[in-house]
Length: 449
Image (cartoon, rainbow, N blue to C red; front, side, top):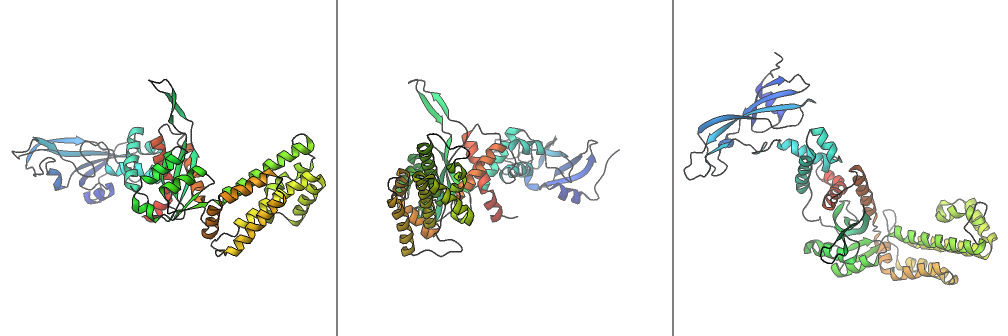
């Protein structure tokens, strides 16, 4: 008989980790696991679920096999001998009941610890539903229910208080269209675009997501939040998106909009590329080819001035000047981009104090004066006009140093979560998994044990 009794039942009970259950003995199941025989040790299990009166009259015994976590690297099969009691309360509608404890609730085939581990593996351990189910021997629907129950407890109902939030959009999947049964018109049933609201300075991840990519979606989500939370927000970081800016003015009129510096430089790089391609076609009558002057410096134009060596800087200038008027205009556009970067480089940071208004005004004047000297270039004129329309948010960035980098980082995590899950068919599930993924680090730091 391959029976390995534990030295004491108390030690085996502690090793099993089910409160309210007492182990009688453990047996090898000859398949690499252990069969644990247990009885109920919690006296409160005798209380009737309906009236709460403790039962004293025994009816019979039942043996159940709830699934539990592995123990010592070996799968555990539990044989729990439960007592079925008669309810002796005359006014109670229940005639009999079977023992139940919080560790294994009534009518549950899995233990609370197993369901907790499955939910934590997905929410905190970055595992997929399929992987967590395979590791713990659970089906996909059961594992998903464990995750949703765990996520409801782990994620706060209301977003944490923050002085600065970031708003950005992300696209996942494809749009879903459905035909209206009455009008026979095709309507958008699921928008691939999601707008995310994140903690811009506290690193607490995603506060929430909403479908859409318009001002109405932003206004609706912000308006639905608690008034006390909205009152504490002082800054909102966004890219150069006019609908988002309008929505913030309606939902958070007291907050100051902050333009993200990355998108400002990205806009300048885009205008520089458009100007370079336009003037290349004017000069050559075709796109640039290998051996052309503008082709040799195309990559240097995308780089920052401080990243160029003296030889590279001289090569860029001489090559474009030898190209003629069009080359000189391209070089002037590159200089405008660098003057704009000099302006943004004045922003306050951990190693730099907030600039005074005179320094900001001087850098702004140098950029605008350079654009005025080359006013015939429409790309530079459009860039300058955009900067003027967004000057208040740009100035807010210079004096606060707040960026929307948290949104970009969260978008990367959201895309990674979707790839690991091989995509999502349910948009609500996608938002829940995204929020768990982006708040995983902050929740771990708040509760390290």
